[in-house]
Picture 1: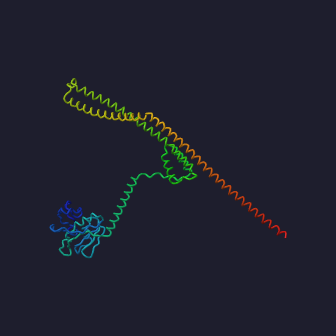
Picture 2: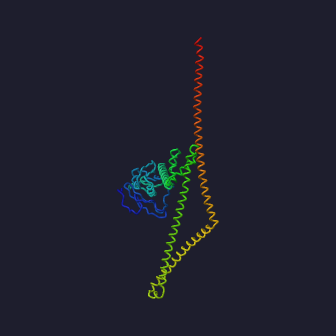
Picture 3: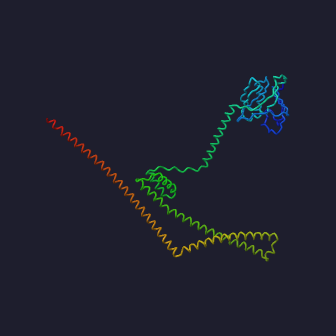
Length: 406
């Protein structure tokens, strides 16, 4: 009987060194495998390889058939434990068993042993030998673990996608507070502040769209709308300032471009002077070549700058011609008329706003009058009820007096 495993070539697939099954087109020469209690002999290489069923998902269990009749669970564990950690062996009374490994890749190493002839020790007894058939087995535990892993991966993928969506989603707008007189007073102050106007106008728009305007709050909302309208002049002034800055930047750019073009002209003049025969003859051939290349390059750049500057000047001339047309008497009259119309429109708006404010105050006064009249009526009704009750009590007292006399 052999004791221990004889050294084997690590490049040749064997127990404990079996890599995943190689491609089918590559022929692998299997060698004899010696174990402590048995010996495994490979099948004839001319025979076709053993067939296997389709691999179930998450398979960690193999079916091992063709075991010797005298093979014990310890011998089976000794043979297949070198393929990987064994979690369970279910041996049948017949010549087969099921082996469950800890990981899926260990099954591939066990499949490699399919086709080997197993002999226990050095016995020639028929009950001590058998041809192994190793195949994938479908186990409920394997499928359940595989399903759990798939669900876990799906949860992780959903979580990753949600994090990605949250990262790419634009930030939510700030919450709009509910209307109250206190919040309206604070909002009116914010509307007057240029730095907080954008935030305040959003709140005002939300309140109006929610329908917070009623007879009591109309004056407060009107004053806030009036404050919003006062920012129109500020925005127009800001626009005019930016337009002036843009015109100044254009003028600075044009002046800088003119200076650059002047320096290009001077550089080209230097190259032209160098190409004259009086100076040209003193330069070497390589120096002349470099000067000629530099001159051509400078002329191209100068022409490009000149065209750009001419384009700017043409645009200015077109603008000036438009301004001259506007300066004609009819245009001037139209401009004056438009200015007067704008002034009249502004006065009309101011007059309308004052009139609406007066109407609002009148409505408020009428509301106060109605409340006062209602209160007076309730007090008058109370006094009448008290007088009526007093008269009833008096009449009852007068009716009781004659009965006492009798």
